[in-house]
Image (cartoon, rainbow, N blue to C red; front, top):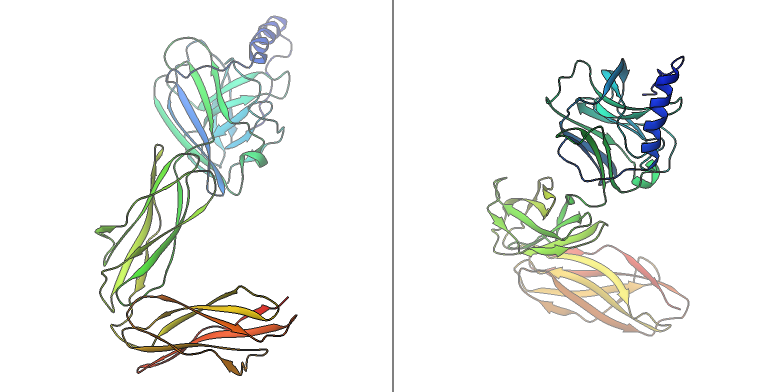
Length: 378
């Protein structure tokens, strides 16, 4: 909302506004005493604003009513939180506080929003500062709102983390506070389970601790009531990090539900539910070809993983300069119902040559072939 000026033709009014602006230029920041508080924080790929509280209009002067949308402009300071459709609001002068909460002089409209339209707006002409509330607002009535700026960061919005307070008295609810937080509730995502065997599996997810020490674990079970949890893990930082947990004691041929859960001092969040189905008690081996290691001009180590699937299993690698392979490593014997590492050293290779390889496993129920991988000798 680009607010209009109401000061033309009124010298005394202009003087009062200039005095108020002098206070504003001091960039007053103080602790909030109740009032209305808007918290701005990064939540995954988006910036989210949430506001709540009550306002005492005593000490303010009603100026006019207008329509407003949820938007922000850090300099001069404007942040309106609520619906993205035009909402009827009343504007009051003159709260005193900081002239900006960042560097950007451009308006950014919220992608979505809801609740009451509340905010601080700085006018275009001589920059009078307005408190914006829903039209007909009665002092002391509780308000709340939210707005999401999809795909935005603090940097792209041009905001500066900190606490910014606009006040118009010293009484209760005579202030509006904007908290731009570098910390918040964790952000999580449940990823597909891997290494699914007859009686075990690995649960996976990602977590952004959002700047606070965060505890992460998984819930799992045969229904969405779960009933089981993995051991807790600790994560810190402001980046997405992988989390995984190996679980055992499962039943063969059974569908399980699971999700990641993370908790820090700002809250607890739950990832989406996912499912996996365990393998039958016995069956064909399951294999995975892993990257080659220790590659030299004439030798390398081929790697893979095998689940014998409850039967005695023979494992080896095929390799060569094409996907026809042509060469094999010595056979190894594996048993059990868990994923096990397999490796084989090969030599006699040619320098500066690309080789193909894959793992192969055979038991009485069938043969499994891993995907093709390549490596190049130096």
